[in-house]
Length: 173
Image 1: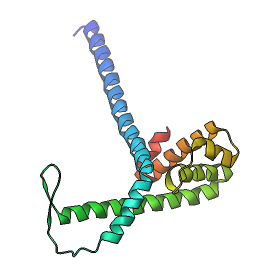
Image 2 (image 1 turned 120 degrees about the horizontal axis):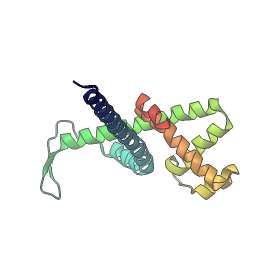
Image 3 (image 1 turned 90 degrees about the vertical axis):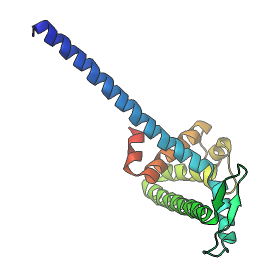
Image 4 (image 1 turned 135 degrees about the horizontal axis):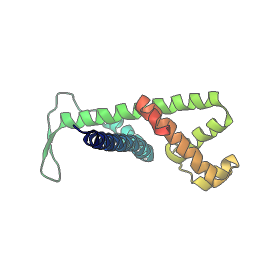
């Protein structure tokens, strides 16, 4: 082969490798964005899920051996067993989230006043029964509204790390 052909092959290979790396990075970013999105969705629905879990606990008096069939609106049959499994997964997930919120609280207490403010912002915005707005949270902590928004964003990133483990660490890169 001539040197021109080899140079062309090398240039084509370089472009192909660069494009491959770019596509891999895009896929990685999508996965990481999905984890952050999932963290926000879990936190946003925390209060509703908590109420649902409390109601579930009160209504779990059905016998384990029951195999009732339930007709859903779209005429599909579900066994009581599959519903119980779904409820058990929801309860387990809520326990896990509650534990990770406690871990986050302990971490923040060790990191200082700004970290505690971020934790409290997360609690007021998503976890506590009475939701507060950014303005109310900012007034509570004597900071600007934008600082409260930034604190919440950082708290969500920290919760992503706790919820998704080492995969969540890449969110902050």
